[in-house]
Length: 346
Ligand code: ADP
Ligand code: MG
Image (tube, rainbow, N blue to C red):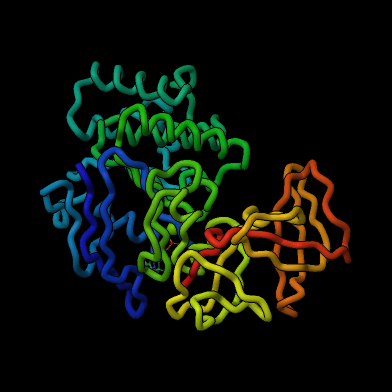
């Protein structure tokens, strides 16, 4: 069943953590809440879990209003950033814990806990205490514990951010596999754009307690609506522009052709990998003569910084394959990009 967040407002004294926020989380999807620290991600997750009471608004699961249902009766699985395992219980007892409260028989509890430990590949660690396991293992136990009671929704608050990069990358895939295998509706909070891009069916970008944009990873990357989203997800060149009478965009001395209308916007976004250097180009493409300022080599990729001759004081970054020869500093070169690569940003 879809989860509907309807007009949720939550304040803490003078701070509005969530401002009349509405959102649908489709059944079976993995939805990421993405945004900078303090934008309201955790508050929204806690309101959904019932751990925090909203000032106004409703949390609906299908047609059922859960707003007044206590957290223990929502049957949602929750995993937090820091491993919240019981330190004095073994891995398997941790996983069984929630089942005891829900009245599962001893035999079923053991069987289910074994199943969940195998699911997270820790079947052989059943009798270890949390302190005898690595951070990644503890977090997998926490996930097994959250899934054991067959929750209708899985809520994860930055579950990977305390782990080192390699473990984090592995667990991303593992969480996604489990989520798809069970088809369990999942909400994951993260401030890491790469995590959201790689894992999510739907990304909700939050800013100051409000939704900035919702969409698939590809949507948000290719068609960011605002400067905030464009800048938060991936790298982008921001071009200050003004409208020309014939519907183009003036960028310094040059006129750029767009596919859409500026409609009062004064900034265009242009992804570094949408620009090509040199060559003869195609008709209708924008072409700007630039001076190369320098190159930053990063192995698989390299970023070439350009100063467009038409717009003194401005710069454009171009992303190139790391294996090709980059132009040298001081060289004159033509930067080309199709009109559809220019995103109109609010
Ligand atoms: P995020 O998880 O995106 O970093 P939070 O949801 O934790 O953001 O916080 C959103 C805003 O609400 C912040 O301004 C934060 O300081 C405030 N806030 C969160 N929890 C509390 C609380 N228990 N008391 C007072 N202010 C809070
Ligand atoms: Mg948080």
